[in-house]
Length: 195
Image (cartoon, rainbow, N blue to C red; front, side, top):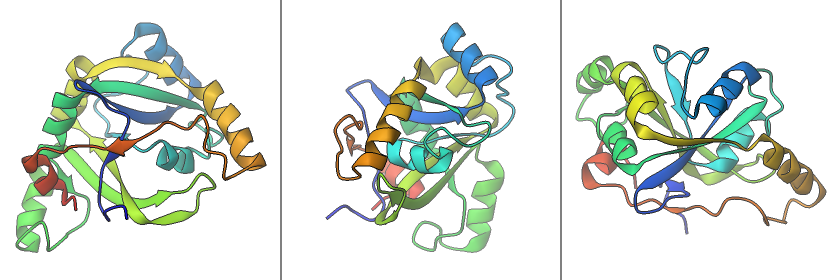
């Protein structure tokens, strides 16, 4: 059985893959430069998702307006772990914070937001366990742009092919990224309330 709150991702010893979906202008500029450049705005909160299927649910498999281009961003594990260790949950959780004022103070001072939403099946149906979304703002967003991003790949064509495959046969998981439980450091796991 999958733990209720567990980070699952494609990762290796040094990196983790997260997904984002953008309009063509932002995606084209980022892929061309190999890093996030204008019109991407690091001063705005940017959300990264380790779960491929949650990104597919959120972007409608790359069909929603301004989310037509799906990017696979390889980022350093050191950066991902640091971001999570600084995170504030998007909503109060008494299992993570002793009281609401402590949580509110963490939200006020943290450049990272985390929320756990129902993981999704290939058809978009909610599952019983949660998937992690990480919002980076301020200092953390700038680090993501300048230090933590290793490579940016446009996987929009692959996403379209996989979407056709899933519509034809929802049980055919061939070609979907194989995600494994991610070994969160203790401080990061505690900060985000992982199971």
